[in-house]
Length: 474
Figure (cartoon, rainbow, N blue to C red):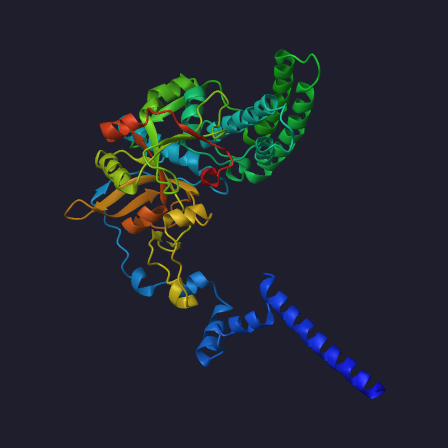
């Protein structure tokens, strides 16, 4: 009897153990983790054949981009363009995120050189405008701290402000507002400094100070009996500290200067004193109200105007506003502008399929699918929606190559990474690449058809500042 009971107990334990093991196995299969069976199945993807091992030995010591380079595509490089706006000299933003500023000022610079017969190497001072950009952005942040003081510090808007108190990136609205408010000076009147060419250190210091001051303003604004006048006075004191930091690292902007104007041959034409506004009005006077930004964002409804909260450089300026259009509406306007010898502010996802040796951006530059044995099939809408793509860099659109039917084959932009990058300082993109990775372009009113221009008068749809599609271009 005792032996039978022991046998039954052992059998029960075995059954219980088996059931427990099966239950554990089932739980392991359905708890979302990687199971042993899953791991075995995944390993089949790498068979360990001689070819797999040979490919692994090559890839562990090399960049996938280098190995995926399409040799046949590299031999088809073509720098001919049927229509091109002639530019004089390529600029260099160095280690800064000021592509938006260089691009906007290059549009004006090209016109100034052509209209006033200036030397090819003439430039407006980026350092001058950047000084005021950083001061105005500081004011924008501090005033926003006052405006939002009633909101808790973990409110999404307040958190976004503290995360982004200042930066060196931007967009065309910033160029327009800053120039309209402060004018321009030539580059030899306020040249670049180490800190304008290398912006991260001073921007980080200013950001640290602004966060400290932002907390102080919030606390001050919440005090009983606090007046707007007292807050304004305190904010002005804080901005005085920022001004000093900027002047120490970039130099102080001139209120007036004397400048020798030279012609294209280097001969002195005139020596005259100017204020920055007088200089702007003579050499680059522009009606910025006649410039409009259009964008191709397939994740949002077309033919609607959108505005981005806080996406401006000047508190009393304008938020970034654009009309969302399909690519088939954007390309003809760009072609019309180029044919009329007018460059455009342009931005795109510059790093995608870029051959950094010759400056060609082409969907066929790299064959990652053959290299990795898989496909990468998302379209533009899906890439934007999943954060796989977005506008990252601004350049000056200056050329298009048209076929016999007048359809674009390829485009070219003047970059601001120096004359030795890409093709003579320029980047060339196929029309297929243009359609997939171009996002924004700023056009003069005269190149926009009347029916599209009328759409821009509609009330804009406000988008939050933290929308990932609207990070400042660098």
